[in-house]
Length: 200
Image (cartoon, rainbow, N blue to C red):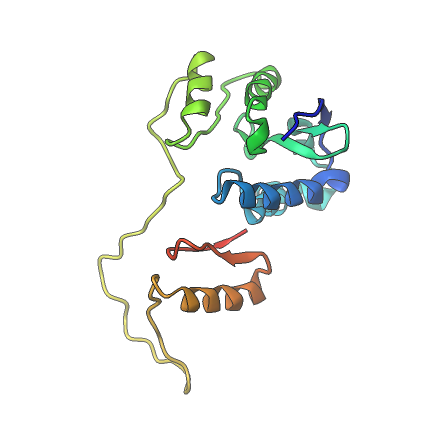
């Protein structure tokens, strides 16, 4: 892919929110995994984390978000906060070199401690953080689990309903569940590794 000239610009929800949403969908297909945020998390960031700002029509978080795009208005990178001082970088795989510029920009906009994230498998991003003297924290929240120590109490279901256990190796069953889930959350999709149904 030919590298085009890239420019950074301010992010505004009214103009750019859905453009970023489309960018996240596109890069999911390119990475074939959730290297960037999924669209559901991006939406929750606007309407959940920053919901009060949204209701007041005063989106303070916009000043902590930037877009990197080509001269043809194609988004290739986004840097933004979730909580104050906690930045996330969404980047097109062919423009990973922009991560350093994103990090420098985030440092310049943060008065106190800057928190950034990297997958344990992302050696390039971890090396970038090390170069900029980042300190690795023990905390991680990417993989979460809940251990249920006690069995569920018996539940009476209405006539015609039953509990079933999903066989994760049965792709047809996973896809059926994904279609059912899509009625509630229209952006869900079945991830073809046979292990998860995810919102995208």
